[in-house]
Length: 183
Image 1 (cartoon, rainbow, N blue to C red):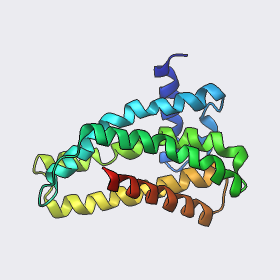
Image 2 (image 1 turned 180 degrees about the vertical axis):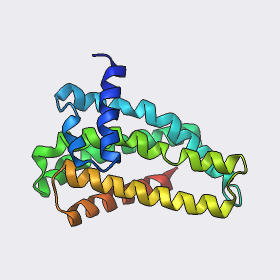
Image 3 (image 1 turned 90 degrees about the vertical axis):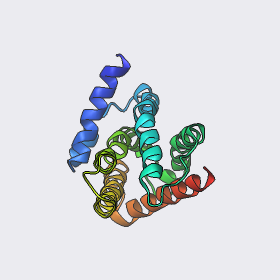
């Protein structure tokens, strides 16, 4: 299968998860090839991530210095492999080691929608349709939604209880914040 066909299938399964259909997790190909292919979602996420990083800096009040494109991509690449690597150990510790592959596949592919979710807010702000206050409020809504989706994927991908899923999201968020401080 080509990457495009694999990606469409995985994005369709991700869309079901985004729609809070926990059965969407069963629509992912769980083969070893699909596991490694899920890391190619990076190439769909990267342009969205770069745009949101640059526009976020430009549109902040006061405007911030635009991040280095190389530094931003390096951070994304680091986080793209670091969290899955850490989850090898963590998933075993929470009794979900057998669900690790399924979780990472879902995590990687849902990242496309999670990163894309902030783009409309930035576009509305960029073109003056949304002022700074409304854009900030919408951004908070998107962040809250993103954290919830991460929780939902952890909860149903790893089949862990709600507090464990919340702890995993908190760990992922802390890793992202720590990584962002480096750039």
